[in-house]
Length: 328
Ligand code: NAD
Ligand code: LMR
Image (cartoon, rainbow, N blue to C red):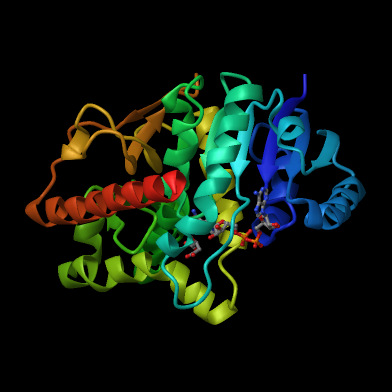
């Protein structure tokens, strides 16, 4: 049976880098046929048709069907995995939360469509910025779908953190494991390598430069999205698509051994002192049944505590601003 996968923002630049990997079998398994549903707004449907032609021309045996649509009912009906990319990206000089006004209504409407038409087991990954708060809005508008089925993308930040450490040590990124992104996919995020390892050695021992790890390293990861926009005049797309594939593959197939990954998920149970009911990025392990669990019991230093509180505060504020826009 083909798996029905929805990608929104299908005419955009992230989708252009993403759709091929999904259709080729890099995300949901090498034997899993895919029915690919691509949603965009009506003026962009011509572009989506062009993307469909290219997907057909890729001649991919797993790709059973391509559906291009601007109708949310058609898009969400029977969907089993939703990758929510469709939204406005920021430009130079903007913060991601500046997009709230433009994007929050999209996630309200699409959350309602998800609630009405998707499979109740559907897994949702929100990418459109501000990703955590858009995910929160979508979750609240789809009360019939379990809250644990919602996540937002912070894997790009995790990949950035692991790549920075690998470059610093002159090794490959796969040698670096268990970097954590805490909190918001914004400049208040806390990229934390206090529990990370490089080839089995704690990163702090391998790097031997605490000032760098507590200063420049954190700043570089926090501001990387803005640096890419400044250089490219467009927001990151290839690296975002790769991170989406990493996130979804791990959700579908499970994390390996002792490793954990970062994803934005709903905060419950006062884990790490984070207020309830935020979409907050935590380290998680995922089992073969696609169930994630927040990694428990990691020691949190005073330095880390302060950073976790800053990013949680920003998420609480964003949630309130979004609520005000939605009720206006
Ligand atoms: P883009 O402008 O190239 O594409 C966005 C697409 O979404 C466009 O085709 C647009 O028509 C479509 N769209 C707009 N409203 C829609 C709606 N209501 N329904 C369906 N589609 C709609 O942008 P992009 O570079 O692909 O980025 C998309 C989003 O992803 C942005 O918000 C960007 O900031 C965000 N992003 C997030 C991360 C992350 O790590 N979380 C990384 C990179 C980009
Ligand atoms: C990123 O992290 O590259 C994206 O969220 C785009 C942005 O606005 O920074």
